[in-house]
Image (tube, rainbow, N blue to C red; front, side, top):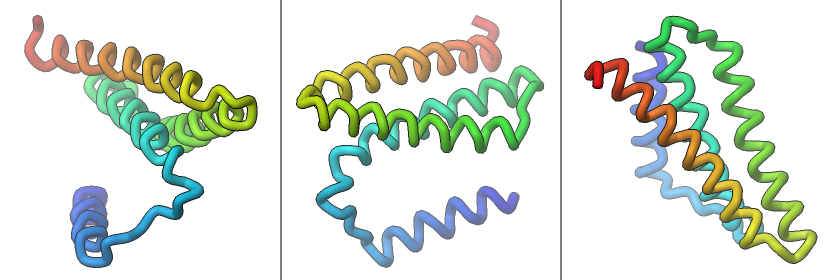
Length: 110
């Protein structure tokens, strides 16, 4: 229940304050969001499978976001930022859809 209240409070605060992302960080935000979604879908799948662990979820969430951002940063430093960004999105997208399929099978049995 606390998590839901915190989520609602965060959304309301974000709408009221209208935060601006610094221009330096803007290329990394979409990658961080996709990495966070991967962790969320993985956590939901683990919860439905009965193996959810909050510590593992937090570590997965943070490490996914940091690793994805570092890969994109490395790509920028090497001059191939767009290609590595695309690769990160593809890999995380495959994981997200795999988890979504497992969640669907668990919920609907199909």
